[in-house]
Amino acid sequence: MRDRLLDELGELAHSHFLVYLMGPYKTFDVDALLDAAETDDREILRSIPETVDFGALVGSDIDLDQQEAVFDLLLYARDRLRTEPGVNAFLAVDIDIPLEEMDAATQSIEFALASNAIIYIVPQIGDNLGVGIETGSVLEAIFREHNERAPTEHQERILFIHESGVRSAMIAAVQDRWDARIYSYDDRDDLVRQLRLFVRDLARREQHGDLPQLE
Image 1: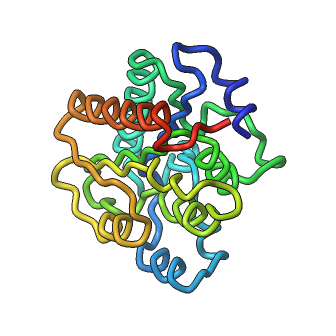
Image 2: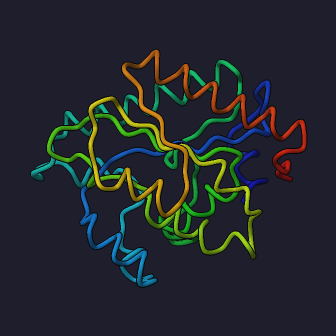
């Protein structure tokens, strides 16, 4: 998967440093997710949506303007990281893999396991706080499968960054169960600044041998 991502994303100053960006979208039951994580109910974990399907939002009860704003923020963060420091930041929609070849949930897990950094950006989106976050299945896969498919240190590559003021049981669960780093940001500039610091820290640790370099 890593070679496929590199081929599709193209050349940048630091092309081989892959940063997978995700964010909120459709809602799902957080309590069900946490129960599934505790009981290893893989059917529930697989049922969590893995992409933003804007077509499905038309005519629904979901605020389309909010979803578009979230998507715009993810695109903004992606483009800023690709410009400086020049890493290969990407969203799931940037990679052309037919669902007939690989379902969306599996794609998201494979993208995460192939990436140098996995970042969840969670802006404040009104009543949907904490219930539309694409964390469960990816984090659980890394948590359960790192002994076989990824180094233990892969969990250290995960950042969960939320807008100041966001409150959610999911945030505490991410830290307690999956030991991911959690930051908060005040505005877009602060978000990009912290993302760049996180990426540079991981790159430095790879260079110094504190984290394994991904092939």
